[in-house]
Amino acid sequence: MIQLENVSKRFPGGQEALSDLSLTVDKGEMVFVTGHSGAGKSTLLRLIALIERPTSGQVIVDGQNTRRVRRRKIPKYRREIGMVFQDHKLLYDRPVFDNVALPLVIAGVGHRDAGRRVRAALDQVGLLHKERRQPETLSAGEQQRVGIARAIVTRPKLLIADEPTGNLDPDLSLEVMRIFRRFNEVGVTLLVASHDIALIDKLGCRRIALEDGRLQASPREEEEWL
Amino acid sequence: MAVTRHADAVAPVRSSGPVSTWFARHASSAVGALGRLARHPFSSAMIILVIGVTLALPAAINVIVKNVQAISGGWDNALDFSVFLQQDTSEDEAAALASLIEQRADVESVEFISAATALAEFREQSGFGAALDQLPDNPLPHTLVVRPSAGNTSASMVLLQEELANLPEAEYVQVDTEWVQRFHAILDIVRQAIAIGAALLGIAIVVIIGNTIRLDIENRRDEIEVTKLIGASNAFVRRPFLWTGFWYGLFGGLMALALVWYGLYLLEAPVSRLAGLYQSNIAIASMSVAEAAGIVGIGVFLGLAGSWFTAARHMRRIEPR
Image (cartoon, rainbow over all chains, first blue to last red; front, side, top):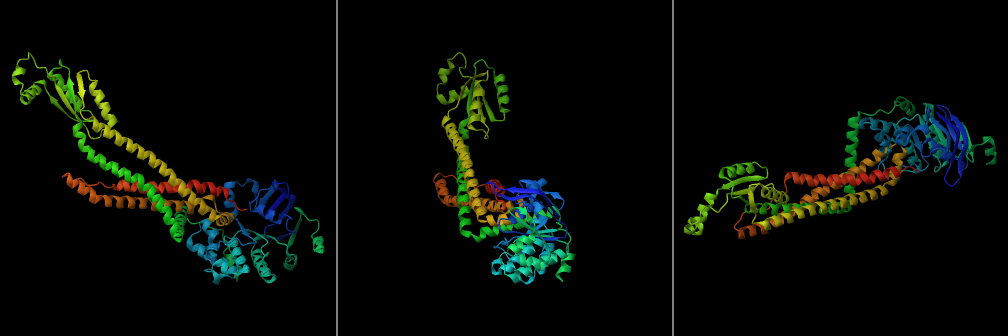
């Protein structure tokens, strides 16, 4: 599903966020990317979301080389990927329902169809009864679940999440991860950046550990170091 | 439970028909933009008022010029050309020339006054009858009184005069009423000045709306970024701003109409009093439906132009970080 070949990303100013990184995430896999802040987790996800372009190397997502996705085609490309953010990135001027419906509105899904899909997505994150609420009246955990509902409402095959539990306490974090797990069970590929090693071990998924923009030789060492 | 529902809904996103989707998107953008204007009634009203006044100015002057022209149109009677023909022109030639000139598009009618008729008239009116009988032959030429058609501008009047003077049979062309021509020339200048002024004011409206939209875009920057992040195209994020510009232009145009009409309403009583003093029944001609629609149309066009330039430029710049 995701394939990185010798990817480097150098920012103007010289610092290298990723250097010569190669990795593969198979279809239907649920993979965590770990590492300290600055290790390149976010940059990796941003390359996949085409918020950034690699300085060199190839990023291939669902058989499509992102290098060949032109600027004008980026919106269409992004619509195929579900994205979850640490700060939720909800729109606070409209209720939960409208937030979740936004990707469907962008895709031009009909009104009735959209309503059905939005409710199905909210049901999956357990927020069906809060569809008319304004996002700021919800707790952080609930806001994050709204963000997840928005990411999955278009039924993407790939879901990427950048520190989705970064602002949540352990119980809420586990709840969010369980939701992810359920998507994974029905075939969604997930790539989740997180530094919460204990939580990841509980889920027993594959881990890709980054350190200074490279694959860490052995993830175990990092754990001991922590 | 949720899992099975998810599985059965895994079908890919299917859009409804392109036309109905396009229409529905625009309808919701239009209503949304209108709602945002209504949420800030004071600032929206100020912008609409500015656009209204800016559009009303040239529109009002145009109405005034139109009315003055209608009044001065009655003076065109005084603008007949008297074409005195060469002495050696025969009466038949003169009559033929008269009907030839009458066929011109810029000529309404030609009256042929033969030398004999002119002499008879002169004899009657001057009282020199006996003296004239002493002359060996008629000293007066044949005369053509040419009345230009109403559609002439002062430039085409000058042209007509020159062409009449250049006829081989013509001895001399006389226009007594040059002051009317001067007046029309002034009106032409005024009309030209309105056109220039209106163009400048139009640019001002585009700038005003563009600046308003720019502020709007800055205020909603986060929203634009998030929307782009989840796959919105530039066209999608631009659409509500185009509608905002459309509404500003539409309401500004309607405001301009209201201002002009109210101004004409205020002028109605004094004008009819003045007309009464001249025992005339002139009334102010208001704007025609086409002119009114034109003003609103120009407002909408300028609104769309202002928002388009601004939105197109800024949307490309705002990318998710």
